[in-house]
Image 1 (cartoon, helix red, strand yellow):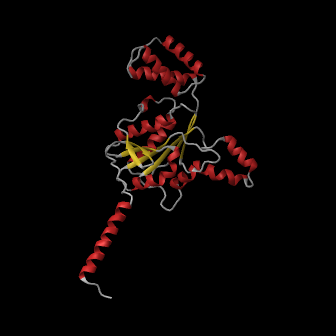
Image 2 (cartoon, helix red, strand yellow):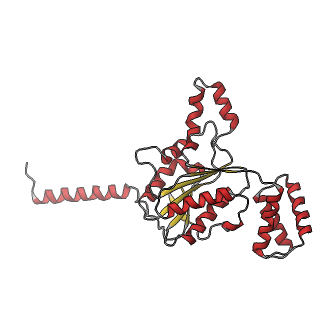
Length: 290
């Protein structure tokens, strides 16, 4: 079968119209993140995007008192990673208000100062966005920078399937974790699941050990376990003294001690967070701008 020149021209126009229509129907290409825009980002989904954080809410590393071992261990691991050396994922677990998330942010800032040209970025991902972590890893894997992926207050309930997405990224899967990414997570639970849930599955499941092992094995994929425990009164008062010294607030020691003890008694607990809340109140009453 042969076609005349006019027929061939008509067919060409038809194909071009079809191609243009298909191009309009196809989704736009995802924008390439600008990792030079900031040192910290927040991952959002729907649509996927990395939001730059111009100024991170954090405290200086030397103001985090009473957690020396965890501080030194996480700092050494992060310095190794920033220098392109092997480093472990880290799970910071334990008592609430003892500085787990503050330590991650403070260590990141400190490493930027002590490791010149490290190009270390902090990327926060929310627990509910973990199913999209694979798409985030695609962006990070292709970048030249190195990334501390930070998930705060991580935990799972008995019917929560988000942990499977995280498990594949930590160790498993064909691709595995990119060499330029390390994961730091904080949790009040060492095994990321309630103790009563562990005991219930052990007592009710057909294969008790297998029922628990699948979720407990997630915490095993963190090379570093850093425990945070409730502080005593001396540590609590030392934290407040440190804040006063750092910000130049002068107050009679007897008055400071009495008010600090009264503050923690009304709160019913002692922690770094309670110490900072007391100092914030004290600074406000003293006319000190933080």
